[in-house]
Image (cartoon, rainbow, N blue to C red):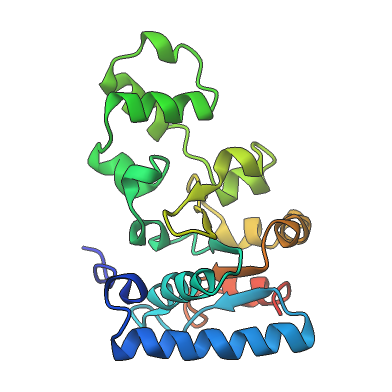
Length: 219
């Protein structure tokens, strides 16, 4: 069984007057001051262990920052357990793992996603065939790091103005090696041109070395 809990709600959207949402607002203000004073753009969100709320923090902080007018890019870099995608509406992002695994989306939506990904033969496919084709053609961070795709094809609109999501992409047997490649630095430089702030949802520090590797590139 999975060891992590179902993701918390986006309180910054669902309960904007709650204490939790106000806390994210305070964190947003602190980040704005730090970013303006020291030109910081890349923020790594992690925790000591699993189930400590790091992904909920990344998602809600991303919303809070976007609500203040910033252009924000959320990066799902926990390649071992990517759940950041599930915080946002799967109907607007058919490439997300949750929608693919549940078979969500109409045939028209699946066709549109297949067209966006350049899947050949899509016009003759049934809904089931489109689901399989899209599921086997997941796009995201790992496909970018392998040089297999472009930002324009993998970026996902979250439904929150100013907030975009880069999903984890296809699973990889060696996340630490992938995240430690030279392409990460180049990719982040490209991201900096596309957003005011970049929030990276990274794995916890104690179980795996991935966050330590990514910390080199964060501010």
